[in-house]
Image 1: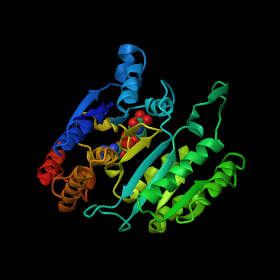
Image 2: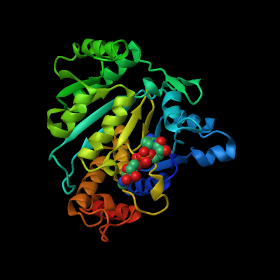
Image 3: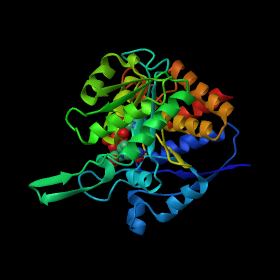
Image 4: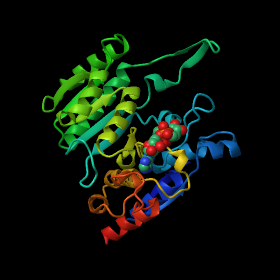
Length: 340
Ligand code: NAD
C-alpha cells in the first residue's frame, strides 16, 4: 500500500527542492501517493488566500505532509503561511536537527544538537497593532502553562526515545519575569518527572555565546518560539549552514516535515541551492512512517555524497564561487546513484 502524503512544493526555491527530495524518496522503493497542494503568494493572487482550506483538509486527512518553504512578505502583507499552518493544525512542536557530517568544513567537530521549539505562542501568536501609526507599535508575547508543559514534555520524551542525555531549557527569565519566569518554572516541574535525563537552563544570550564556543556541552535545547527560531539557525551555522538542517512539526496526530531554511528567493529557478535539508526532512518522515531501512539508506547516501565532496552544491564547497559546485538536481542524482 502506498503512503498518501500531502506534498506542498511552496514557493521561491521550494518547488526545486521538493522535487529533488521526492525523487530521492521514490528511489528508496517505498510507495507514495502524493497529494500535491499549493500554498503561498501565487495562490493568494489566484484565490485570495495564501493558505486555502483544502490544504489544511488534505493534511488533516493524510496526517503526514512534506513541505517546501513559503515566502512571507516582510514588514507588510499577509500573515506567514508557515505560522498559519502550524496554528491551524496545532503543530505545537518544531523539531530542528543540527548534526555535523564528514566533509563539511566547520569550526567544531562532532556537533549534534536538537532544537525543540514551541510553535504556537510567544511573539508568533500574532497579537500586535499600531498604537499610533508610524510612531509606536505593540506586540504581545503569550506564554502559557499548557503550551510550556507540552513542549518541555515533548523534549524529554524525544530525549528518551532517541537515547539523548540532556535537556537545556532556554529563556530570558531574568528580564521577562512573568512570561519566561512561568516557562522556566514549568520546565523545572516537568524535568523532575524525568530523573534519567540531565536538565539545566540557560539565559538565551549566554546560550548563543556558549553554542558558538562550546556546542558539545549541549544536547537538546527546548525553547519558546522566537528563541528557538533564532537558535536553530545558529545551530545550522555550526554544522554547515541552512542547506543541511532538516526539521519537522508535530501535533497530536499530524506531522509536517520541512527544512529549517526559508524560500531563499534570490536563487529561485537557478538549480543552485542545497537539497539536503529537504531530503533529510524526508528521512525524518520515513522514520515517522516506520520505514527505518529506507531512512537509513537515504541518510547513508547523503553522508557518502557529502563526504566525497564532488557532487555538492556551492554552499558545501570550501569557496562559495567554486566552479565545480553542482546544482540542486545533480546533487539529488548523486544521492540516488549512491543509494544503488
Ligand atoms: P532563507 O532561509 O530563505 O535564506 C537565507 C540564506 O540562507 C540564503 O540567502 C542562502 O544563503 C542560505 N540558504 C537557505 N536555504 C539554502 C539552501 N537550501 N541551500 C543553500 N543555502 C541556503 O531565509 P530568508 O532569506 O530570511 O527568508 C526568505 C523567505 O523565506 C522569507 O519570506 C521568510 O519569511 C521565508 N521563510 C520561510 C520558512 C518556512 O517556509 N518554513 C522558514 C524561514 C523563512
